[in-house]
Picture (spheres, each protein chain N blue to C red):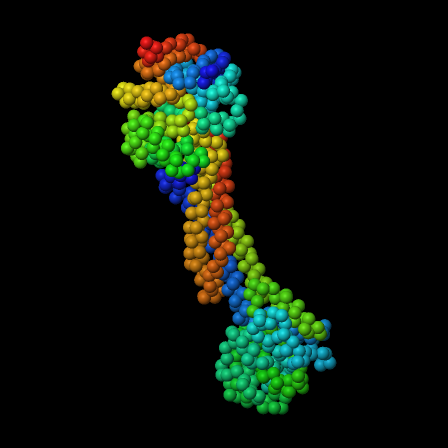
Length: 386
Length: 234
């Protein structure tokens, strides 16, 4: 017979009350776990997409004169007498400390060409790295595989009335349209793509690069570090992280996370109120019992220990069940909330430990006053018989 | 030296504008090994006297000396410790913990000691043996008769072998036959050396005691030796 025997046996006897207490706290914990896991999973999903789709670092020559824009990023004004990046510089990019985080390095040379009756922007690319970076591209036909082939954006092809297999003159030389991009809704729709070497030759920029796009595998890691490392390797270039796309998505997620915390806070508060009211009721019901304990010599601390131990046991159970229910809820909700259908649920041990700790803290904090109240009961009043 | 000595004990209760004088100056000495019954009508102050003796009710004035200790000079928690070591309580309504077995109820006072589990169980079984309930250790209170529950309550009160056993109307809820059995048990415990102080309104119970003190309106109006003491003296 120890004090915990009293606590455990009392809980066993009052199963309905214990269930009510557990559920009250469990709902709060489950809510927090669901919301935390959902936001973590959604962040991870966005991060994964950012890893897979698109560049996050842009390298351009140091110049204030660039006025061309590419991918919605203002590049400044291109002048022929500016210093461009050389192809030799590219090897320095892959030698940075975080080179394992580099998915693809896609150098580009830009220049204007006459396509049919209109001017168009010619982009010379390394198609291997470009296709790795732009996985949303859908090509009617094939990507250019050899010199003399080009890939047209959908709008450029429409304007020039070209389809795959057609031949077109660019700067006096014939080129075959190997493929046409399906509409992307981006600037790519109006561009002409050709292998880098061909474009350099056509534009008279052999060995030179106008800009480099780098796709970094950096879900959750500070892209800033890689930007600094690349900038150190290329002191004459301007290296920037394409923050706004990442930031806008993460900002939306951040708003959701704050809202989630607010909701979870309210639910936890209600849960703690349930615990408080139920424990107070339980203590009042046990007035005589507590009087007996005091009469036979239990100290106030002993009484408190009995009550708080009961609260701890219930809270731990609520924490475990709440975590399980929360993960279940997150699993059900994730397909509706995430951007991609195959978004993965994030299992975080810290969330599990945290939810149980939170349940314990909230349960015991809410039971503190009832325990104090019980310990201060006057044994004579409690027993009434005396 | 008396085991219990009370001098000029007074206890007042204030209820609104009214002051109720439950005890108005009681002097009492009880020797070790005595069996004393305290009788009186409702409102005579007998229950208040027992609660003061039990260290649960601070007197308004006067002193209470138990086993050489000035009881109410102890702090609140030291009083609890004193009760644990020196006093055993038997309540009118038994006040057994319903979700504990008879054995567990008897072990309750041992829950706050440093005794090993085996020692606690043995002490509890011995106490149940002394009250004649050795075979019912695993029963819940709801599975015991009134008399059996009272015996469990007595076993709980004596499990730590306290110097003083306080009983508040222990036969109040029992039939005549069971009451006699319970009183005989108290007598037997007293014969074994247990000091017993019992509050009762039943004059028949006084026949088992060495001495009966009669209270009225907060004062002792008479003390008489009982048949038992008279028989022993003879």
